[in-house]
Amino acid sequence: MKHLIQADGVYSAAVLPLLQGGKPGYVHSIFNNGWNILMGDGLIFIGSTKNGRLPFGIHLEDKQVPKLISMLKQDGDQMIHYDSDTSSLLFSSFCIKLDPQATYQSGIGPTMDRPESLLHLLNAFATELLIHNQPTGAGISIDHFIECFFNEAHVTCSDSERKIIQLINTARVRNLSQIDEILRYWIGRGKGLTPAGDDMLAGMLAVDATAWIFTDTFRLHLSELVEKEALTTDISREYLKYALKRNFSSTVTDVMNALLQQDEDSLIKRTRELMRVGHSSGLDTAFGILIGMLIIRRNSNWHKKL
Image (cartoon, rainbow, N blue to C red; front, side, top):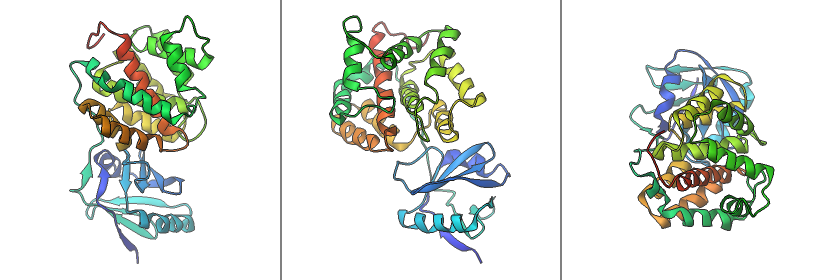
């Protein structure tokens, strides 16, 4: 007899099409705080909210997670099915019952008419990253990069710093060869399940979701590279796929909402929460948000869309 495991009622509305697609799923990867399953052409994370609510997440109570992970490991390879009649995700030795009324949204919006107003707390946000005093996953000193960005002609910039400045400049152009070159440089760059370059791009996409910092050509080509080419890890690719649809982890949306609301106390708290995610993943994402804000700052004569 299956054990009925009641989820805590929190799961992303974005996972429903994957669950209801009619295809069985498989365990993709297991971590200390949860696991990923592959259903159809997408991943679903099942586990705790240690890294926030994920755009492709089903979140259980923390105390349930270790037991279920141990049961997964004992069962080995198995098919996973979704029973739409009971709204249950069926594993071989347990099931997770979902409440159809209890979903969350992971989108960012609305789009701003005046993107430059997002810069009201730029100094406060940058200061938090500097106080953290750690290099990004790509080995970039944020302090030195900021100096390089504002005094490029007078400061010795590293290759990575120059590539960031190239990315900033390319975000607002339509030249496909320039866009392709810089995106291929950053997508998948770095170690880990979500490489630093991808986390940085996700942070930039969070700014783009509110302020349209990318040209259509840039955004479309980024989407094509993520969807059609194997340039990074499965998990990182999934985050980027959702980010391109303006869906993000709650740790990211919380930072963006604080910036949009110009709430400095909340921004400091939420930025620190974001930077605690992963080894450097949260910092890399926060750095991407900073880069997005610098794109806005550089375009003083702002036009909503090129």
